[in-house]
Image 1 (cartoon, rainbow, N blue to C red):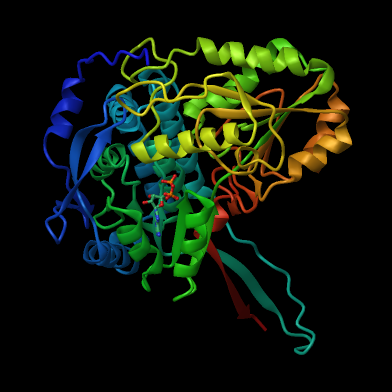
Image 2: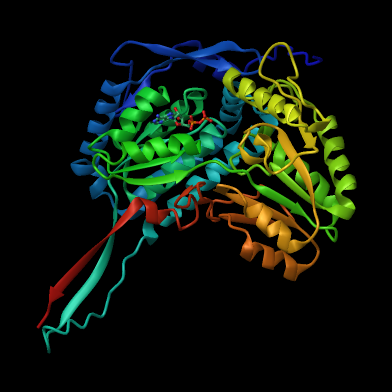
Length: 502
Ligand code: ADP
């Protein structure tokens, strides 16, 4: 239990921000919950309360949806040109770019991730996503369509399609990349001209709320973006079921994704889902091991394993199994675990006590079924939500730790004999979010890419994300794609217009 959580001085802007209870954003105003209630957000490095936040419930969701509905149906937003809309999204990116330090700080404090990572990855990726989506605002186009209509011989028509915004969108996001997940959802909604009610995760509401301030500063009209922090079972469920919401976009667990689908049936709102994963990471004996070993460690340990696409099933070709797995375990042992604000920290705490207990119970389950740890295997401190980076061997496909998503820094390693067998084993999962292959044989790599049933396949790399690259799941990992131009499909609908000319 060797982790010392020394008190790090909090950035004064952030200290000031979290000093007062944070309000929610409805119709361009910062307001308290209708009930007057607040809920705590915790510092995962200490387990202490970090900030109090207004707690949205059904009544606040009603108000937020009403504002978003009005902004969509009657507000200036619909009358803006695509170029004006794009410029607002770009301006938001510029404002965020100026405040990278502050946002990184807030993200690190609320989520637990290392400040260095938030500064290098989370916030710059968010800026980039908004800029990428700003460019799309002016490029959302329909088609002109030559129609024949056999039952009106000789008639002439002009037929075309319009791509229109889907309307009021409810967006429910998770806690693992709080700011970036808000951007993945807000960027395409704003580029296409939708209005939004965004519910951040109850564990990490702060960066989305601060982003709301920048949204207002950028000049988005009132009601275009409403931000309503609260619990999933209350605020989230009310949003998913709301009859005036046209679409719900959700990122989170597969279990809750199914609840969202049920809740959406009332008005048959459109649903897009980015859900869990149990991604296979396959290392062949002809791989460049100097890249594959650290790459496989980072595939699972990045963001403390709290990535839906984490490379949590490591499959290694038999002749190199020991070398690779011991190499990954060596990396795990050297990872400096500590508070996110410590500049030395490479891995912070898990996000919550619930998550800590969940990961520890998976470890116990693995050990009770015969798995052994080459590194880690335990809680890593008395205070805060720390878990040791863990490599489990002696695992079998029927174990819970191999089948289920742990969402923590725990990888299960298993040997394999040949490429055909490994395709079957990789695909033997309810999930299909991501997969990776490490090999120097380019034909084998692309054959594997073809046969792996996953929304993303990385070859000789892992966790490579870009605003232009679509991301989403096969099978129970989701419906639809985030990012790239694919995501625009989720926020637009097609209207066919047909004119008789002669
Ligand atoms: P995790 O289990 O990792 O916390 P969840 O899927 O429970 O992930 O949470 C992701 C998001 O879904 C959070 O914003 C959470 O508040 C929300 N959520 C949880 N339960 C529900 C629900 N029943 N209806 C709508 N949203 C929910």
